[in-house]
Image (cartoon, rainbow, N blue to C red; front, side, top):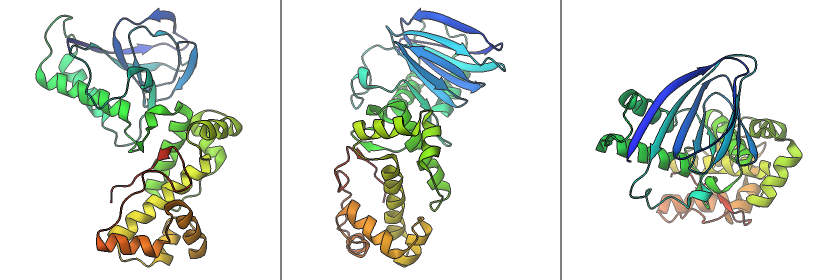
Length: 286
């Protein structure tokens, strides 16, 4: 990192920025209120908790909350020597993420704010701050939700937000009921449009992704508890153990009993892809 400039800003209702062209990188964290971010001909809704990453050359504008004050934090930075090697090409980076509870990005944002407010342009960035910024960029790009495979960064933002909503909901209550309408609302699109995005980009339906999240939790319970399969099915939101077993075999290519035996014997290997061929892999740390 060559420099870091950070700060906080509060906008009166209805304020906005028509257009600017970015010459450096900028993180924006929407803390209070909401915003509509226009970038390169597209619009993104940014609710409280959203973090935006703008890049050099982006043509962008903002329309801040028309009904209440908006408060956001920002970090401008430049890069010398390139980004960490594990990151995909910059054109594949996500532009906005609605942060989940317990994410690593916002605590790092606070750390950088506390140590760089008023940092002079051109002043050399210390090793700790540089490492914090690299970690922040990596976490934002690779995804704080824990999705792996071809990557949550490669899917449209409505798909990411829908999966994030489902993952957060099921992490608190694995048996919780989730509807297509709830997923569409989380993605800020219609149900029909969300289904089309899922079909085009991850080759499964939105409800198929919810099913995969339930099943990954079932695998974790098999690995960490002695619960009977009937109880695991119930705790993961399946009406019957028969329904659970059938869905499980569809995804993993084996019945639950066989996967549990593999786990007990140390033979379990998470699938590289869903058994039905989805591009999106949802792994669970066993």
